[in-house]
Image (cartoon, rainbow, N blue to C red; front, side):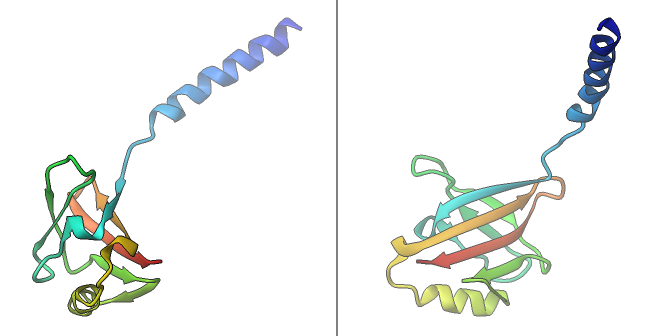
Length: 113
């Protein structure tokens, strides 16, 4: 019986360092479409508010940033064009993925309800 407990404790002790190795690679923000300012070009910046009372935060985008509208990937120019045509901005859900290590936005997804 003592051997089973000893083995269990040993296995738990070995698992602790593995749990400590987790780190955040990307952060996701769900924002309102009205609280997002799109970049003018692929090497620009995007600004958004992560909550109603928060200040705008500005982060760089790159040519590798993925722009998705209703599940379809498109260029930034096409994305801006399609977003500009949305009249009821309360019916749009926006998810912004921020890659923490390189401090760039990796994906912006807009889903119309």
